[in-house]
Length: 381
Image 1 (tube, rainbow, N blue to C red):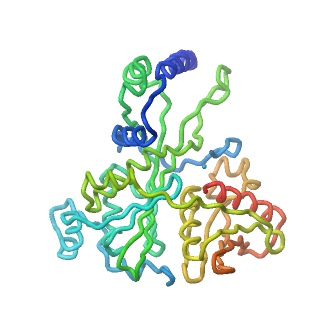
Image 2: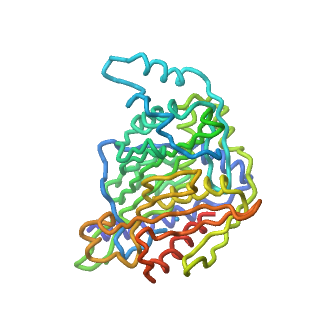
Image 3: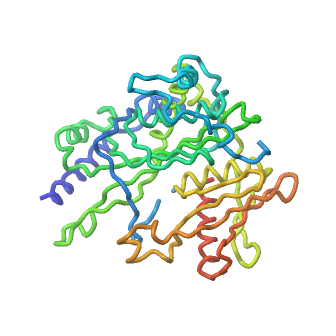
């Protein structure tokens, strides 16, 4: 019955798409309207935990050491306390909500991030409260590296009916029980800049969708599969975060939409020492560090530690060739291994990124995986 309903829905869906037609609007006008119309609606009672992509499915896409603990070690656990008891340090930190903040929007390709004229200790608590205010439970917090990550929540974003077509809009409202769900999670990463006087704020979205396998057979089932990034949704969420951090609503929207495009970045993949992969960035070490950190966010990689001065990311990741029955039963976390990513400037405008096997076993399978992994990082640009 479900399979038949899905088939009918697919036919009507395609019909609705054909009715959309063309448009004489400029790309900027389309982007502006899409951004304004994008509505965010998460079900706080629809949390989905511990989603691992099955191995048979495809996954679609300062010069000083960064020790965030020196900025946030005394920060309150929650900036907003709903118990009614507000401590003095919480009052001081929460004042940022009442005062307009100096917030810039940076842009490179499809990615945007914020530069906030506040210290990381204030932004830390507010970022955590922002995610909770949108219904997201916090799954992982690492103050040392400035990382906050949520669990998955079901996304029921409401798109205006005129953008869907009448039939698709009708189906979405009448037969929502037969529309397979999408779940999202967010990662916010903070980097202190300008000697800790300002904070770079990066927000990234990761999505999973429930898909049908072996459709029409007696073994028909549904599984979770990594889903392509909804860039409009990520941008809309960044706008909400910008307002939450004290930005004026009208100015925030304008800054998000009209952020000046930086020069397109071309990253080269090459063979390094002992056959391991390396990446070549046409920029200095500090800028390369920021770009590598962003790419790691996009790939949803676990970062255990990092140090800007040393130029190191310490990550945990499952090699593709290790995935199989064991990881299918116990999840990818059961087969993850530690690796080091090294960022080294080699000339005035060139920086190389190296893959280091901490175990020093130097297996051919790890060498092969380094090329696959760095290839995925290069594709992010």
